[in-house]
Length: 380
Ligand SMILES: Cc1cc2nc3c(=O)[nH]c(=O)nc-3n(C[C@H](O)[C@H](O)[C@H](O)COP(=O)(O)OP(=O)(O)OC[C@H]3O[C@@H](n4cnc5c(N)ncnc54)[C@H](O)[C@@H]3O)c2cc1C
Image (cartoon, rainbow, N blue to C red):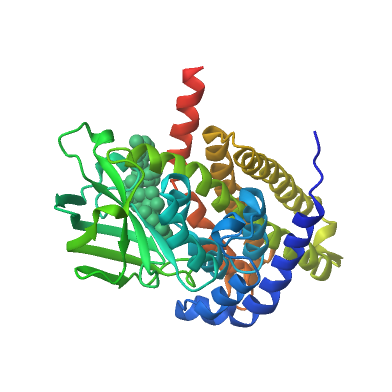
């Protein structure tokens, strides 16, 4: 048992944080206010090895593993979770190509994304089905050497800025629901693809989110990822990895809340004493610190297990669930500790409060995580 990070991971952590402070801080407020996506920051991050850090070097990544990627995600989210998402989710969808794609697909799609030249997306959720993954309706009908795709996707991260997306489609409607799906790579510029940016998000407003329509989109059959009819199970395994990476966001945001609150509680006085001298205030800070440490344990262990080739989907669901709980708790406590100042946009805590909530919604709602964990417990 060794809880010490390697020198490489320590350096990666430091580099990621310094990068975020230098690049994110100057534009953070503007991106939040104007819902502005930042391609130039993503490209700079790629030049520093921060995009697709989990991808092995053979496919253009930094070979830092899922643990390295979770640490990067944590440090970027400590500064701005939305801009950080533009960096770490630039490869979203590529996890499936890496896990199930052909050698040719890996060599075609992974290197340009890691280099910052291209962006991918994972198009799964639909207007009428999110949690109910087997309820998706998008159809891909075989026509000679092509699939012809029709359907709608909703809330797709990188939707309007991506070059390609990995989409979940029904290819085998004659099979039972769970065996009817396949993952297919769809070029974003293919005729029949329409993409509309969704505006007015509560938080992570620097991130691009879109609704996408497929109308008779013709895609070569070679764009199938993995096996036909295996899309559902492939997607479930895909989430085992991506949930762990997303869970890292909650650590970073919570650390930002705690660090800011400690400073504020030393400076701000009430009743002739610093806020931090009151035990009720210390209780909030203490609970934040405990949750952050517990969350780190869950995220790092589940990431490490993936890197060891032993992914644990229940632990991944726990990490993701607790990430949302921790981030929402810490952001709420941070607003409260700042009093009225926590409620105005001069202070970053109100932004973190808005950003935190997404961790209980995307990549599986907190209820979906509970269902996963509960099923495992009852199967024992
Ligand atoms: C900013 C943002 C980015 C996103 N990025 C992506 C992306 O890149 N790709 C993508 O495919 N999707 C993405 N999503 C979609 C996200 O994953 C879904 O919104 C989420 O999975 C929930 O699906 P839904 O919105 O359809 O809610 P629903 O599934 O309709 O759920 C509504 C509520 O009912 C609860 N519920 C549903 N079923 C059950 C049940 N059986 N038991 C108990 N409670 C239940 C849910 O937990 C939730 O509280 C994104 C969403 C947002 C907001």
